[in-house]
Image (cartoon, rainbow, N blue to C red; front, top):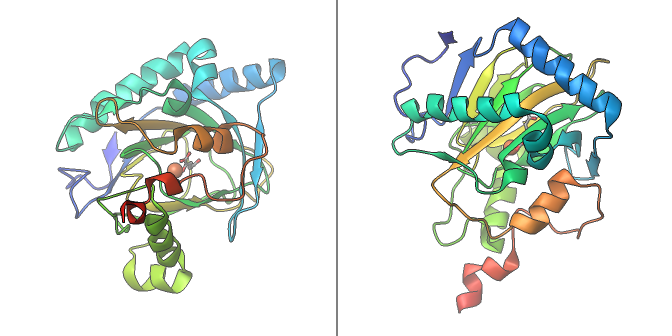
Length: 254
Ligand SMILES: O=C(O)CCC(=O)C(=O)O
Ligand SMILES: [Fe+2]
């Protein structure tokens, strides 16, 4: 296993924000998982999600955590193994999410697909890439977000996040990192602080990766239900961004 940034002591310290680990799984181990995923896709349909966000749409397919739990026992143990691994690099212990659906997913991004700019609801997200593709690079800005202590899911937070997303603001104030998927590469980031998106997949093979999410014990999220429908189902959803809920707007206290 090669640690690119072996200097990292604490992934969640203000100076770090992410960790990149090559060969977390071997190419053969990745191939076994890819074969299982492909077998599953032959038998069952996987929801396709298309949300017309600008400038990068959310356009991908996802095997959510409920399906992972019932059909992919090997991913359940991987989710635990990565948990133990990342806890070596955090200031406080992290845990798998209470929400099974959002905990451990398989993202499948076909040719033309992409993943919009966003922050995650949870503190730390690990992305394990299973294959190499054309396009589909993840671009992120470690510890970039200005977070309101009073409400991570509030309307004011949404405004701050929108302003910080402008390309000019990103290039002035952010440290851009671009990672190309390759088999066995593990990217761990403070997902609720790192602005991130996935560029369009341009080649014909699907981009397939495992998304594993962690947080403090029993973390709960104001936006849980609408965000799950938005991310994991093809249902029509409200036009407003489900990452934010106006009922948790600190301004509403006044
Ligand atoms: O698929 C990826 O590489 C990123 C996915 C992501 O950011 C997420 O699921 O929150
Ligand atoms: Fe994310």
